[in-house]
Image 1 (cartoon, one colour):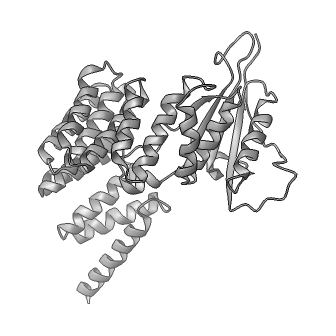
Image 2 (tube, one colour; image 1 turned 90 degrees about the horizontal axis):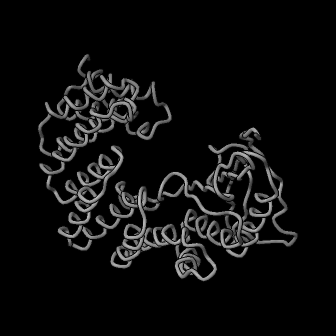
Image 3 (tube, one colour; image 1 turned 120 degrees about the vertical axis):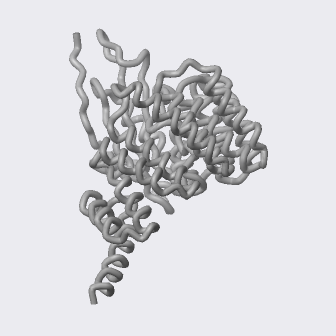
Length: 364
């Protein structure tokens, strides 16, 4: 039996012999699982050549953390097949949808699988990179070809519809986005359901069609036999949609159910995952101005996962709001010491400095 191994390789690929006036440089890294073949080199050269026409140049970097695009190649190996054929997985960074609403899914999952053995995959990878660089107009033209499969495999179609829907959400074309996403969840399973139905429900709400939004979310919960994580994810998404339409009681009820399910399946969740649920429920209870209940949720989150730093930040905000300045300062300082480069670093620093000024003034 041939042993399998993971190997990180950095190829110096000549993108083109021609001079190009590129507007953007996209950083990319990739790994090869199992025995390296010529596929990655040929494939990446094809993607690079196609991207040149869009004014984009690929630049290869050493690690995934430095990259905007990450690709992993899994190659079928004789004697121990990883996949039935060569598979390329692409991980993208794009924030446009999250900037519109943190509830929206910008990608199907952290990694998107596509077949890498045929030329059509070059088109699909190119479209995904264009999407990741916020060029939805160009990406959609390629996705349109993919959803009309003449020379494309059927497996790519749900992915293409999903990203078309994402692009249409960005453009504010909510009706079209709903149509795109419906093609995904009506013809696929698993991760497609949670991401595409939630995005559709959000679009329905933007159109003032709240009943249709929650009918869709209910359908996901009632008609599928999911692994325990999936109904929890859907419950959390529905809770946030309820909060969006100001139905806080139903939002909190969904969070209660989600937390109950998670605690019944502790072997499938990290302490941080459970703590996140408590913090989110606290953020919904705060909309009812019930400070004691909010504090209880944040305290429980930190008892479960003392290293879950966002809970310190949110509890600091709560303490600051109820004029418990010393407690707030302690939480902001804890957050800053544990997450010096965290998402809320700037805000926590501002609060901490303000509180120190206030406390110093009181001492004087």
